[in-house]
Amino acid sequence: MQQEQALLPPLGMEQEVAACGRRWRIARRDLGVLERFYQWVLPQIKDPFDGLEKIIAKLSPEQAHAFISEAQAKREEILDWNSPVIERFMKTTRGQVHLFMFMLQVYQPDATLENARQIVEELGPERIQSVFLLADGQAPGQGKAPAPAGFPTRRGESAWDPSNVSLSAGA
Image 1 (cartoon, rainbow, N blue to C red):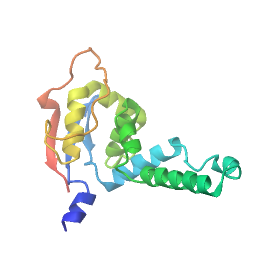
Image 2: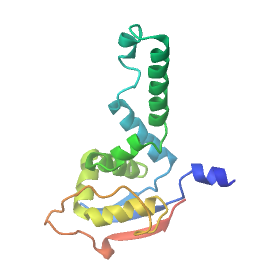
Image 3: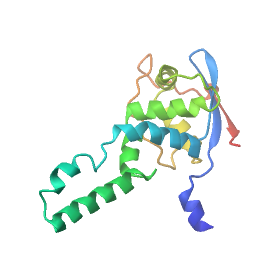
Image 4: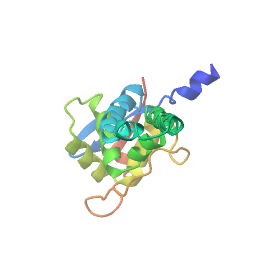
């Protein structure tokens, strides 16, 4: 059972925030949200086997085997949700806005990337960090959700206001 717990993310919390003139329900970061994020990232990553066929014929069998083994290891790393490649995308502003959009779309299927960007901008980096941590099932200040990538607020200050959020237990 402990091995299963290590493989699955902790259960997070659904949240509700007020931003852009309305209330938005934000899903916890579950496997469905992570899969959508992964499917968004995947086409942006170069396949380690691309172009290998052009050079493989020019190599000795030992060198060819080494190149193929290395490509296979890179592909397996890419296919892992916890891969450094996927995590790098989560730490970018673009990646965080996409991840936030996927979390919004669980309850607001018509939410757009622009909606997500505007909400993230209005809430500010500290609040978004808290949203990601709670969505992961971690208390703010105790986890490692993607670090804010410097989202500006409309007035240049932090948009965090305790009155603009309510929490509900994730189902």
